[in-house]
Image 1 (tube, rainbow over the protein chains, first blue to last red):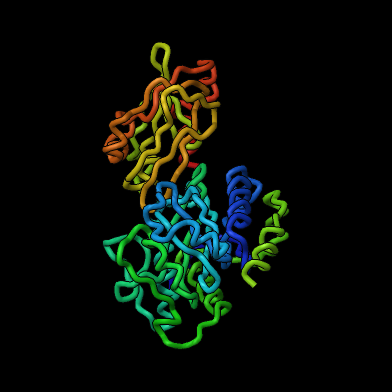
Image 2: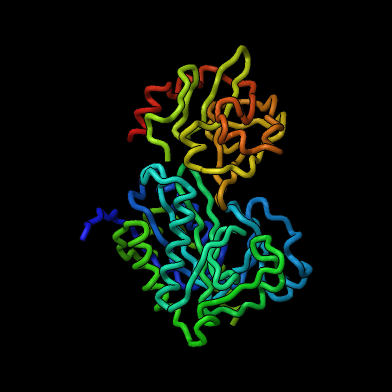
Length: 248
Length: 131
């Protein structure tokens, strides 16, 4: 058996977190990473409260309901710096953000995106689901329906944002948009595919082992407080508290 | 990715840690991204350009490049005012991949040309790349 040298990296479970709060946290981690205060790459595992996000170039043309419709449901629409078009995040969708110094890894962006897709494909395989790449768009598809998406940003060679994998969420909000700018694309979830209950905690454990294999990492659990101290981030926990009330 | 010895790094340019190049001409500086940066990003599908007349401090973000689902910021090697943008990149962003040194992104009137003293020449940049 070939032994591969694995790099140490941190993994932190942020549980259910407000989008903007996680966004600011990532931003602080990116700064800490390229300034050298954070010596290791970081994987964040989380779910978001319901939110629509638009990539850097995404216009509102792929939102097919009026903005008021989202406001009435207390779903914010946020433009962010990642690549890609509009997407939806919500509870039941696993999001993995990867803060990685690509210069240090001597890795190019195309390979990095492929590795994120590979992580999703291997995770699906654990559930007996075959995930494919399609020439149509990046991401992972099951029988032509999208199950996993990828969107990244880079600041001084450090990546942030990452992948999302539909585990057991309601797909209704995707019908309000053309996900990733694709018309007539249908979305699916692991739970839809296997017709059985799927536990988020279990998917998180599985995806962690595949992140370790695909990216050649040895992941070490860190608490959120540990990372906040390193990143100099003072959490805005009120945002999540507000969301808890809104979506209770 | 290309091996370091395969990278094209002209001698007459200044380089930054974030992989931009700067070329000084009479009273102006042309700015682009290096062969390493274009190779790392892969196929560039969109170049976000500033406007002529915008001013930026050294080190601040003046635009971005989008490749395979990834947006990468680009930074000012030196402070200055944008005097020209390479509008050809709006329709043909792939020019940056084809020849990153011909495909300059912006031209600026520098605030203080001596800021180029803080930039790297080819040898120092190569050393950084070799890490």
